[in-house]
Image (cartoon, rainbow, N blue to C red):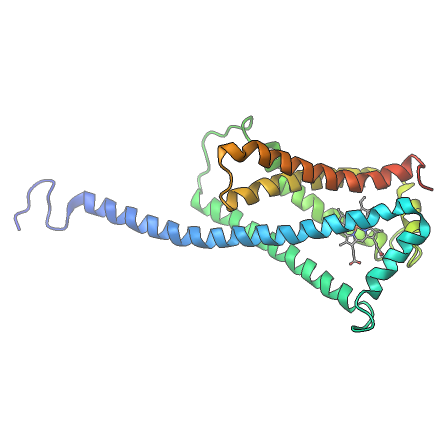
Length: 248
Ligand code: HEM
């Protein structure tokens, strides 16, 4: 074949470019498939978390029914599944599901973050902080803060690193726990972080599932806000009620 300018025997620069483009799109498609899979798994494990925080929030509201109902509820969590299963077996199964969900959620989120960093090693030259959703910006730090809160919270109410802890006395532990103002402030700040996380998480799920068309935008934002306010609000009224001595 005659080698003329522009049309070379090996196809020229255009062929190299289209090969590079094809390789890039195959790589992107393969990477995209895995990251979509990861995003779905992040959403699914997030949903397990939402199920837990909702159930736990409703359970905590029993403090308004008095000492007996909430202590009985705490006992029920341990007795659940008896006599078919040994005491605490169902509770430990649920704990393991929850711990696995949290570990998977965090690991995959971290991997997705690394993946997007690798895809954009230089970073954007220009970012628009004003247009960025504040919930999105606080997602990473909010998630970390929530994790630290959970460790603090378990130490406080479950492991008994609490100045006046009485095993099985959930009501007593709550009342004495939230009469410490700094602790109440930590809880309220954590509930704010939880609200942000729930809001943005719900919004992200709709992106993953592809239901984020403009016409759904307002409905999605309202739904996400309602979920965040109901759950974070439902949690927050417990320490607030103790602080203002509405329950004592
Ligand atoms: C004001 C908010 C909250 C209050 C008053 C509260 C109260 C409690 C209490 C009293 C317990 C001990 C229950 C028992 O010993 O039977 C507990 C356990 C626990 N809480 Fe919370 N909680 C709050 C928020 C949260 C949040 C936001 C999370 C997670 C994001 C959470 C996660 C847990 C976990 C994982 C346990 C251990 C459950 C178990 O394995 O037995 N809590 N909480």
